[in-house]
Image (cartoon, rainbow, N blue to C red; front, side, top):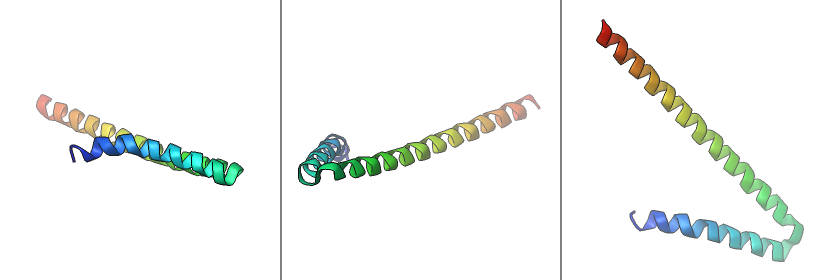
Length: 73
């Protein structure tokens, strides 16, 4: 995993850019649909990640508040 994760982080965007270029070369305007689909998926992932992080922060704040309340009692 020490080698695979950085390798994937580098090669994936390069592969996507190459795929977009080839799609433009072969299908022309249909590349817009491909970019729109990838953008939609990216927004969905971003929303999901943001929601998970927000809920985790809220849970952590509740636990800290409960811990402080139990210490003061």
